[in-house]
Amino acid sequence: MRLRKYLSFLRAGLIEMVQYRLSLFIMVVGNLLYLILIYFLWKAIYASAGTDRVNGMTFSDTLIYLVLATAMFTFMEMYAVWEIGRDIQSGKMVLNLLKPMKYRTYLFWSYSGTLVSHFLVTFLPTLIIVRIVTGDAIPLSWNLLLFLVAALMAVVINYSIDFIVGTICIFTESIWGINIMKQVIVLLLSGATIPVAFFPEGLRTVVYFLPFQSIYNTPLTILIGKETPENILWMMGLQLFWCVFLGVASRLFWSRSIRRITVNGG
Picture (tube, rainbow, N blue to C red):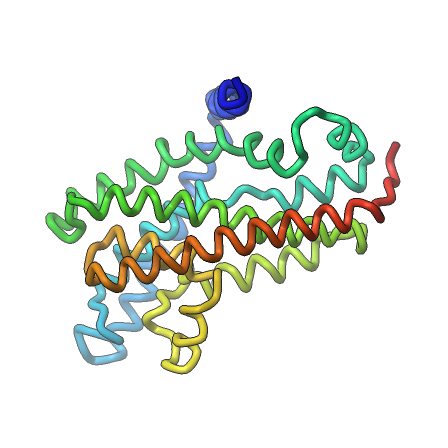
């Protein structure tokens, strides 16, 4: 019965995607322009390096990684921070707190339909095209199943980080600057804009133990299928740790912070 309630949010998100097709089209075009920029930028980087392999990655490896990272961003980003901020500033938060479903759960499932639709419409076609163009660069084996599990945990980690940052709005009543800073940190340290393999060795070691690289680097590394089973097991174990830790931390922070909420709109 509870699952059916959650799936209704999923269905609503899918219907919304169908209704706002122009928005989806603009997003796809924007991603294509960004990928063209990435191609010429990294082509120039490898040309200036004077070698076919930089930090263990060829130009083809880097391009595949960044193309998939861009496609992955389209369904990973849930914009929960902005939603929480608007709910607090407008006064809608009072109504949300009166609903029978916990706000954290409600917010997550309200984005689930958009997440699934973007995965099917943007990431999956991108993966198929990359597979066709590059041949066997991406193996079709157990890595696909492990990728789906890792991607699901990455969504949970990303959402927990967003929820923690959004909760800060209770104290600041303004979230714009904090969220921009969060986005820069996550996109940089997660490997979404620059592969983690290109980081300096000391920084790379630190980044591997932070939750951010579990959002993009871990699922993409598993999907590309060039890591040993031992390393994959370690990366997914670290993902699971951050899922549990950040999930508990976001719940506790919310339960403590909500006692101090002040509403300006209603």
